[in-house]
Length: 297
Ligand code: MF3
Ligand code: CO
Ligand code: CO
Image (cartoon, rainbow, N blue to C red; front, side, top):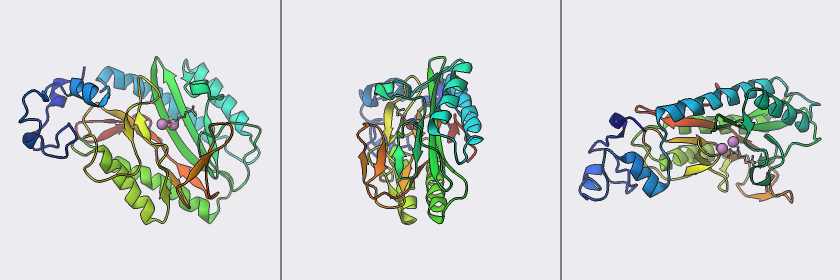
């Protein structure tokens, strides 16, 4: 259960029904619609979102600690010559050694324990005998299941000496996530998150991938809400304490179009331009958010 005190909707706050109106001008007037003391039931029924109580958040935070530690370990391995299969093996073994399960392995048929996406690969790159080369960028996306709870985070690294293009796209992707995090607080909406990312990234001359989005996470790998990385201010589901989700903007240097390789997983930019991504799992708090996978970006 979420603490009752955290569930009270202020009369001047945005209505949790997503209308974009103030609560007092919306569902507060419709008796049967919503009980301000039962946002948990309301979010489940209306949006299929499971708000997390503090015990669930604690478990996700523990899974997140492991994800962050695994990222630290991998960061030390990123150099020219290592293969993505070798990185996969390290992620797999470290996860298991810590009593957790790598969520990607066998997820909808995915064959490995981590996603490693190089250069024009947007996401879901499958580890292989491919060596990292000087000048590559590589996104490492790690999701662990610890004690039944999931946490999900990714970051993009330079291999050796980066090109100007590499520096640009990694910086814009990282800043996109930071700007999104800065608008996460009760009363703001899912649309505000997408808006913050889209206006910034497009303003930098880059583009936002549409086909893959952030997601609720915790009891499952992917739950509600859906969190697009584009959108309109004030639109979409209002954020309330106890919502746990990822924000994971995929930003392309060229056009946003993609295609998926014959392996049914690897998503690449259609124009061959570089793509970078950063992801954290966060919980909405009374005053803002807490990252459950703080990567220290
Ligand atoms: N970790 C990815 C995400 O951020 C999902 C990977 S699905 C997999 O949502 F099967 F490719 F692992
Ligand atoms: Co994710
Ligand atoms: Co991920």
